[in-house]
Length: 222
Length: 350
Image: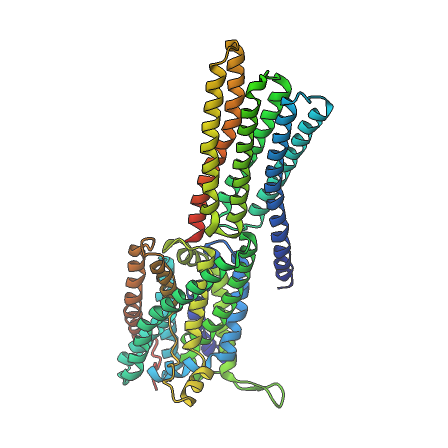
């Protein structure tokens, strides 16, 4: 009985720690998005010195931390058989969110390594697209937080993700159209289009995760 | 104590073991089936509280069982217990959550028929009525509690992990309450037939407290139940927890609580005398079926969710078990009584 009592007390302690871990993970996703926005802005304003590389390194550090946190959560959920009915959903969700962090990181490295040459006339549109993508992931972060605390509000927040995803589609198509109707060389056009698509892909993934969240929320609410 | 008396008491202990393997499994079945509580923890808590319930509050329902058939010879009581235990064992082996209540009533009626004793039909009717009432009442209580708990959980916006921790604790508490109620309500099935012929004598521990012979019998029965829980209840726990309806941990808590309330209502002498003192109709103190209470709760929750998820074929199979069990036990009891009387030349009635 005594041992059992200790186990129970630690169970409550672990729940609190896990809550913190999940919150931290979502916060990392949100912060990586905001950093990505700054990195694109810096890149377009040709501020690509040491500070620019430092920012990218910070994203890498955050991505590693996110991986560690996910593993901690995964081990704790399995070892202590917590939330048995939602465990697989939660783990899949965290994996997919981790993929989004990876997509942000990949885009940053692409800017650093490939140095795409975006003419000034496309800067405003690329920044606007980046804004929309980051807003989309921010809406997703909010949806994720509500999933853990208030399943009834998941759908209300998830629709914002869908809204931003559609906006991102429109913006990326318009930008790609403008790139291909410009006088740039075909190789440069292809290169810029590749970047636009890679940034837009983040929104597509965020929408997929939001759709999954709606299903998970329905499963939890019945 | 004579060796023969110990031998005859073994019949009751066998039935106690069956109760532990089957009925007690119901209490923690949903919690273990949903993997919210591990089997060892469930078995330990269940055993402790079932023994406490048996010893402290087991007297009320025992009186009713005594009225149905005043078995007055140890060999008769032995035959009834073994028949009931054997029938429950067969059902348990088939993974069906049956109840020792139905088995012992079947066996007592068998004894009444075999010994040409008078059957108290008013008591029998009361018992049969509770068998119908019990799952319905449990279902209604489950629907009420589930609606209330769901509202609280949704409006409190509690984190999924904290809710999980609270649900585990609630399941454990409800399980402990359920085990206590089960001991109080069902010990009559195991030891009721031995009360009039108890081989024990009262032990005066202090001038204020006497450990009566009946309480000693109930302690023995409680221990037998605990052995049944540890050795054979796992399979039924998973049947109750998973097969009938996919149960969420929160539903599991509601089901255990509604089951515990029903068993407590039909075992509480205090509540019964309170209702009588208020000029209200009292609740009969009848050993009800914990299996029926649990299945009633599960179906209640299933109906609340629209009824589509309830596996009605399994519900039908379980119900069939409920009808078959008393008849099967009656036949087995008559057979055992016949063997004891004619082959071993033992008196099954005085």
